[in-house]
Amino acid sequence: DQQVKQNSPSLSVQEGRISILNCDYTNSMFDYFLWYKKYPAEGPTFLISISSIKDKNEDGRFTVFLNKSAKHLSLHIVPSQPGDSAVYFCAASARGAGSYQLTFGKGTKLSVIP
Amino acid sequence: ETGVTQSPTHLIKTRGQQVTLRCSSQSGHNTVSWYQQALGQGPQFIFQYYREEENGRGNFPPRFSGLQFPNYSSELNVNALELDDSALYLCASSTWRTSGGYEQYFGPGTRLTVT
Image (cartoon, rainbow over all chains, first blue to last red; front, side, top):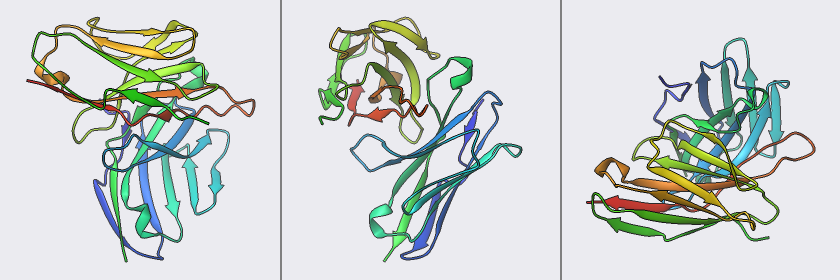
């Protein structure tokens, strides 16, 4: 039973355009959400997070949107750059339930075409 | 500031053997979590240690065990290795921020191959 789902295994975007990566979750106890980027042969790198009390968080080119009623979040990258090409993981935790473990999706491979 | 480091980078073991993986947490971080990432999957939570005590465990059998030391470094031990244990093992360190943020920072991982 996958509690965090990333339904698009891959995404291709032209350099300079917007990249939108999507994530759905099923566990209502999740109250903290994170995005990680992973290059081959490296560990995941933290990008941005959002608490369930917010619906948007921005950090430079990265914005995360949270729609609690739909149990859906998305990561927007604007403008996309070739260096953004990597696998992006959505993760969630239930801090309010005392669990600090992260539950990950399977990832979306983003390719930014120059 | 030193990030999370893991050793060894790669390891090849035979089915039935035992293995120990090591992790040094990022400076100032008192919590360490271990994850297993199989090919084509997202990382799966194994367990977490906070101040030398286990603080949560995922759906992994008891042959997966761990330790955290007073300097917050950690070990992951796996006994009676099985072929399905072949994966990338990731260590992540974290600490609470006064803003309530709780991000986990990952090391580069140890690639374990069981033959």
